[in-house]
Image: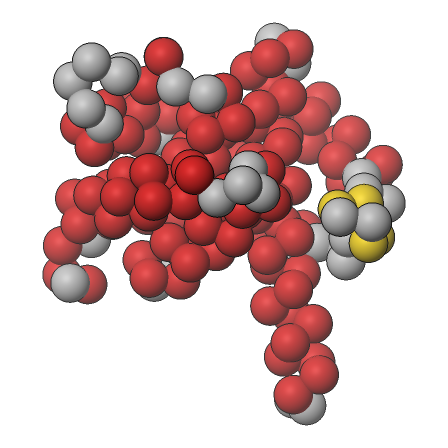
Length: 157
């Protein structure tokens, strides 16, 4: 595999993570079912969305689908992990819905997929930066994801 091909594969995975957060947000906000949102994203958004004026690269369909399905399957467990990582006065129901979707997507990778925790943290920090460009949320996201990773995969630390 060439360096360019490897870089393109990484970009596709990164795009899939961003799309997964968007899809989970949409599912919650619009009350839409997993299958409906998944089809919409695969048919109409992959490679069509624009971020900071640039067209997004085609996503990795398998990763996108796995994140969505596992986030839904393990939502209760992931939300509990997230709650334990948050300050007691800020249960998951009170945080920004975009961050809630981000934690669910990352949690799916921690709990059900074989992605190394450090990769998950770096990737979702990038996603957080895409949604919150002023950067204030990055430290918060980093702290929560680090706590979740240590709980889900303590052997990796």
